Image: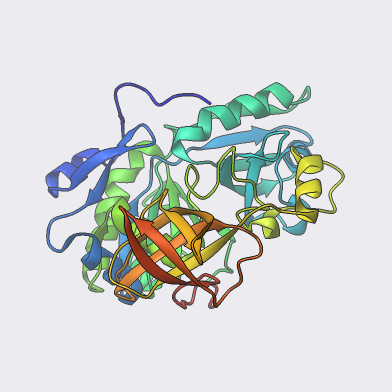
Length: 369
């Protein structure tokens, strides 16, 4: 895997975050806002669940695969089946290695049979592009476009009102996108997100991102919304049970183990890692489950999990749920551990009781028309 650069990269919105007094931190090799003054993670999390929040996620990667047969080529490499969707739709998919480990999880935008736009995770973009380039047949071009575009997420039940205030399209189907125009500049408006709430991800050109951000933040304020950092993005996605690469998915944690098999086209003739994943599917050695803490405490990644004194797994992601006001976690557990059972999480030597559950931990309206 390609290591992160020694000096963090900067979002096209970096100056905006500094002006707002955001707490900044390294995230996948990028200096990004973790939270803003005025309430921090809990206030930002609540704004998204109840109203609307605006996120800068320009650190996410971007790549284009173009040329005759581009979609067919991508489909032969990544796990999900692009034949399930039509141009104008997006799809969650995974890039695996031959052992079935996850190099990255990403979103594929099917623009046409000869044009697929990919949004990988920040730290893994170079490796995904490298692998696709190495495998690409003549006539198919793979181009890394990491700093050609920004990405701004508008998330929450009032997200439509925010976009409508800017004259941008809303109301299209979940996981579909529209190529729109805003003040003479192109912007992709995709009905996706990482919070579990109704929302959109906007992909403007890099230099157009600051003006679009300013307009979105202003329109969100009219709806009681606020800018949100990656701290709230993490608590929101954990409440939904959405995996984070590097913790809940990795070269050591396969889609089968992470219960992401729904994003695998099992009937496809080929994709990277298929043979290993088909074999593992028949007899997985561990599976991802949710843990709802019933005592006082907050689980964190790498905390051990026991049942009746015997080790049965490990936490991969843990946090305090602002919605539930209690600790929650995703954990890799032995397959025999069932939903509804009580386990204990070792939090710095203290045993914290939890109930095994199936995520999401909260109910939302992600797919609502």
